[in-house]
Length: 341
Ligand code: FE
Image (cartoon, protein in one colour):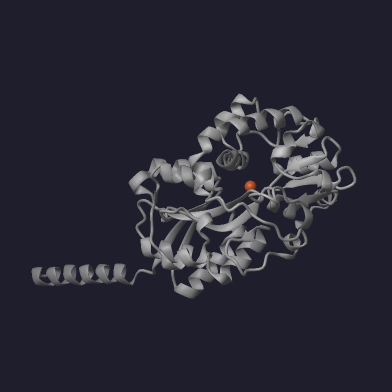
C-alpha cells in the first residue's frame, strides 16, 4: 500500500469511528436495588418510547451504595434507584448523587416525597402502619405509634430490629414531631412492650403475630400486600389473620416512606438519566410500578392496586422525607439507648 492510501485509510477509519460513536444507540446505566422482575418491563417500555437503551445492574441496596462509593468517578452508573429516604440521604451524604433540575419531576412528585435540592425523587410510596390480629385486638384500642408504649400493650408487640432502616426512619419521623427526649421515653416503653427480642424481617413479625407470639406487628404495607396476594398459601393464611390499622389519623398521619432514584454524581448520560426518572414518575409508569410491588403511587390521581384499595384510604404524614435522613443518626442513638436490639 502506498503512503497516500495509508493516510486515506486512516482518515476513513477515523471518520467511521467518529460516526460510530455519533450513531451509537443512546443509553443509560441504572443501578437498582429493585429486583429485575419488578422493574425490567417498565425499562423496556422506556426504551420503546424514547429509543434509549437501559443497562440494568441489580443488587442489595447497601451493597450498591458501597459499589458506587468505591467506583467514584469511574462508575458506569447514571441513575441509582433504591428504597427508603434514609438510604437516599446516605447516598447524597456520600457524594454519589448530584442535584438535578426538572420541572416535570417537580410537578409530578409531591414536595414531601423528593429532596428539596433535587438529589433524589420518590417514585413509589409505602406506609408503615400497625397490623393487629383480628380476633384478639379491637381496633378501638389502637390510636397512635406513641400509644404502643403504654402498659396495656405489655408483651404484645412484634417489631424488627433497630438496625433496620425502616424502623430508623419511623423513629426519625417521631423525633421530628415529638422531639428527641419524648421519643426516647417512647422507645423505652416500646422495648418494654415487645413480645420477644427483635428478629427477622417485616414478614416475620406478621407471621409471629399469626402464630400467636404477639397480637400487634409493625410492617411495611407492601410486605403485607405480597403475603396476601403473592401466591404463597401459608403466608396468605397467616396474613389473613391480621388487619391494617392506620395510626395517627387525628394528628400528623401514618408514617410513609418511598423508593426513589437520583442521578449519580459522575453520570456520563445525564440527560437520559433525567429522562428515565421522569418516565418512572409519569402517569403511565406510576400505576404499573406501584402495582407490581404492592406500593402506592407517589403522584396523586393514580389508583392503587385492589389489594391496597381494600385497606381504605388514609392520611399520610406530610413530613418532608429528607428530614428522615437528617434525623437518622439521632434515631439510631435513641433506639440504642433504649436497648432496642
Ligand atoms: Fe423492604
